[in-house]
Length: 261
Image (cartoon, rainbow, N blue to C red; front, side, top):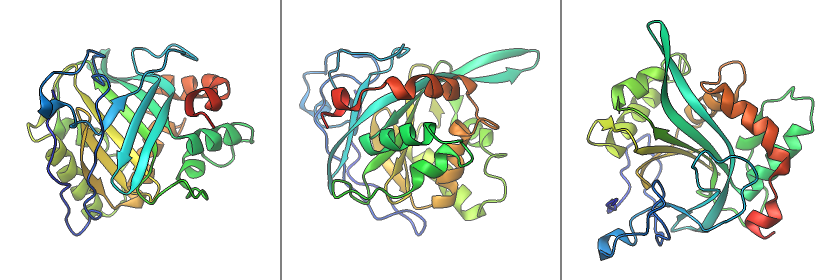
């Protein structure tokens, strides 16, 4: 099972440390019952929550997960879209990872509202606007991309895949992103079957989690926005399936059923 980091690391370009605490309900990746060992019970920062209803084909992703910080209540997040990230490899296209997009209730509302517009503004812009709600805290999760790898991929290859998207950004922010990825996954390679997650927070910071354990928060709003565009901008999306899935499913997702309000 996953092991818990004692604290979040921080540098000059990282946000202040935030302690994460969750109770494990099910194994986030495999949906197996949790281990009996005490160390495995309070280790995950992203957990699956029981929810029987599916509004569309979830491709194996939990319909509902929870992420919380010490400074905010547990935040339920709903699966809003799924897709596959593929990469051209010589003459063939190969699958790299499945991606599931999760949204908070506030982000679900923002997505539904955006879907009614003429789309002249991007969904990314709609999602990164601070939520005017007393229920949200500065470090509350807004959006999460959960990446489930179907092959082994090194941290370096993952970082390289974003080189073009990050072009023109502050080099220090890019360095911090690579450093954060390496700290989140100290082994250096994401193995087949493992999960990497990017979590966008209310204060426009970006959190990185490996195997359900969140250890890094980067205070780099420009990079965070650019990374979200990698998945949501139809012109550059690394998974067109994800964008199409979101457009097809966002209006049928029942917030009352998932969030209770």
